[in-house]
Image (cartoon, rainbow, N blue to C red):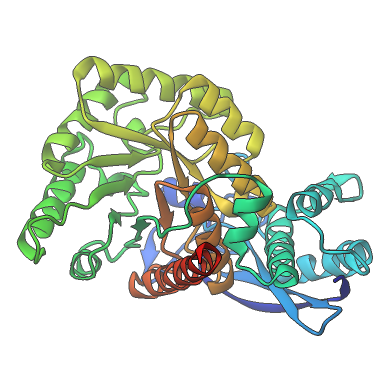
Length: 417
């Protein structure tokens, strides 16, 4: 089976793309938007509707495989590609992707993924969002050619040796940081609440505001859970604000995280991006120092890295240094989905937690593909995406995992007879 045509169409992303630099600098919110001018090159406003493109691969038997190109919420910072524009993406798909893929035989996914990564535009790698969407479509195409799920393609082509089972889901609150927690608990989310701690007001000058929020979340889980055995992981994404609150002092940051662990007990605590090293090497250094400081205190806190850990090469560096407990493999930042697979397997084999994440600014399709990948790679958690509404992400990712697990289990039963 081979590809006979490549089509593209602009579609809606699941959220917005925000200028993180402007927000950190104190941009004032006005309802759902922010006032003021953007600071990061490429932004037209501090908050803009996310843009996405669906890639449709028409196959020789008439089937259509598809994936979606999309960028993260905070584009253009932390070593990431600039803001993704749908029109630019479709131009690249027409000029470069279509000529390269039409006529391609659908043999194995890794070779197709590697070929995609080698394509360039004026000597530069293709935008990560383009590679992300096209690779999703290629994975879907190979699965359709074989008559199996995308998870089975990943399992077989990368020889993971892992069972294909649902993995824990992590839900995001967005700015609605209280009401959404009730919805998360009532629906039994595995990991919560994210918290969107993206400015200093949510931390407080001495960290007290964040301690109060963690305490509130912990108490809310205890009050609302129907089953005493329900014990979600409390995972807060703080976007480097804790480090900023304590002037980048690793020892003071460690003291504060130990306070947060006490506030979260009896639930496990993960803190994503507690501080920002300002560069990839700088972030490896401070993350490693923070882990060591927490060990000395005996503080039960897992550190999650995000910014500055964008590419497969970045992931390798953080894993080899042991500069995290959990690595957020942020799917759109890795470019092709094959890089996500390799990164997740690399993290897990390195003894760290492999988090198959992404962003609220993705689409239903990229979320479905991520669910297949997370299952096949045995991720410690997968992001319930897109959007910040909780229910939609849980439904899209959770339902896809349930369907895939049922199909694979039925196939395995038939083979064993």
